[in-house]
Amino acid sequence: MYKSSDENRSNQFSKHIKHYKIPELLTLSSGYELSDCEISYETYGILNKEKNNALLVCHAISGDSHVAKHDDSDIEGWWDIFVGPGKYIDTNKFFVISSNVLGSCMGTTGPNQINSATNKYWGADFPEISISDMVLVQSKLIAHLGIKKLVSVVGGSLGAYQAIQWGIQFPEKTQSVVSLAGGSRLTSQSIAFDIIGRNAIRRDPYFYGGQYYDKEESPDTGLALARMLGHITYLSQQSMSDKFDDDRYEPKDVDTNFEKQFSVGSYLAYQGDKFVERFDPNSYIVLSQAMDKFDLGENSISISNKLKNKNLKWFLISFSSDWLFPTSLSQELTKALFMAKEQVSFVEVPSNCGHDAFLLEDDIDYYGKYVSNFIEHIFIEDENTNSKQNKKSLSFDHELILDFVIGSKNIIDMGCGDGSLLDYIKNYNQDGSLLGIDNNLDELLHASQKGIPVLSLDLNSDLSIIGDKQFDTAILSLTLQAIDNVEKILNEMCRIADKAILSFPNFAYYPLRNMLYEEGRAPKSKGVLGYEWYNTPNKRYMSIVDFEEFCSQKKFKIINSRFLNSNTREFVQEEYNYKADLGIFIISK
Image (cartoon, rainbow, N blue to C red; front, side, top):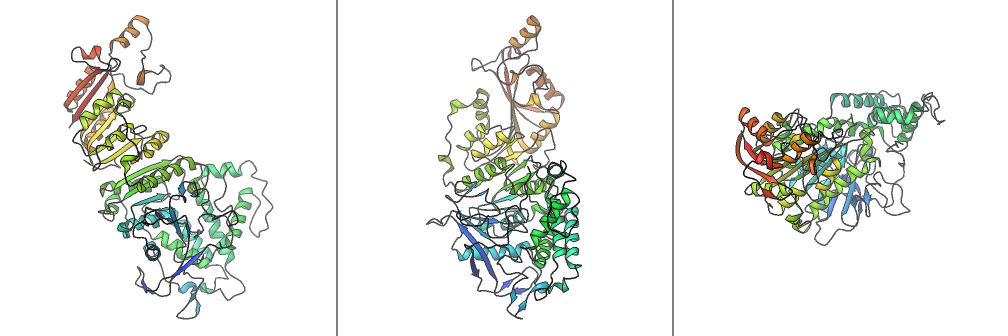
């Protein structure tokens, strides 16, 4: 059920690899001056005449430039499920560039290549590098290809770090950043696993201080152990249970010197031995150290200082079972981006696949479609042509809410559903900032299809990810009755925005009263009140008068209000607590 992300990887190189030798001296972040740097890369699709359809894909620690097959005769790529004609990153639309990172062993200058100054292998003498050095090298390639600005930089894991660093280092050279299974820095627990892996390599008797290239033996055991540790961190507890529990004592008969008395042991041994065939131990040390030292700050305030004035669009995606790059890291980065006043979307994808989820098919219908929606809207020159919604298609309360948001530039819809309201608003609010929040990923996916920035959050949880007064107006439409803590959510709306607009069903509406009094049955009507008593998400059964009294008690200021009969689509001015089935309020504090 849970495949390995290494399933189809081999030590072969694609015939489509290209090479570019950077003519100038590169000054690395350590101060080291690197000459004769060569970068290996591959391209997919066609660069258009304007050269504005280019997109850079960045790989993880063990990846390379071969992100996907070029044709049926080509070897498997590491993201074939994601990149290609008609796929989530569609090479019929985009010119996709994928390069091997500095310090790797797959064609770009790294420890396993010859140092022109000494005419010997670099080995352990290869300079310490950083994520910013990797991005510097990539920027030289992009310039060489004649591309002034990328549509997006997309990456997962170590690739996510590169994408984020692009946004920090060269914001003028990309329109957007997509981070999958990334964050602002590694946890101490994650770094600990890398330390053990590096120690396993360095303490291997055949490491020879990193100068093993001309020896008969190399530190294969140390590298295999490091990879075994890595694979443990890439999987989740659930995925390992599903993969190994049924045949725990029936290991596959793999040819290995490592323990294989359990099925999980034979799997790890196989992965470790296979990795040795295609990767260099020194490169593993260099790249894992660069990943461990990537650190934007310990909290959202320090992180936000590095993200100010970038004027980019960001999309961060995490996976619920990823404990190597847990969701909290992406949430912290999202909070920092809000503080820096950047446009950001964030989605947590529910998954049992762990960190490897972004490389596997299991959850691709979510993360793939979100990325596809995002980058395609970035590329659309005139977003107005994408959706011109007729006002008649809106619900009655949405029509009236529209009247209340006139003059507001920055609007957040808390419980946005499929984004219909924001989709209509954005046609008349081109210069403002919009954001839709919901905990239903299917609904949010429709919102993202409309080009709306989205945030997957449960309104009953902590909303501190959004800073104070980030918006002019916060909207809560027909959701208040399902909220756990009404006072808390209204306080949050008034903290986040200057004013809050909310609509809710009036449970004192006369047909509902009659149903309970005359029929002795739980009240029910159309719309949000159309549930049975046993399956309703509604938790609050308040009336308009109840809400007015609540605002008075809790010191919320009612700026404006309207009362509606949605069946007749008329305003109700007299006996509204009896004749209106909907109330709309504007409040502040």
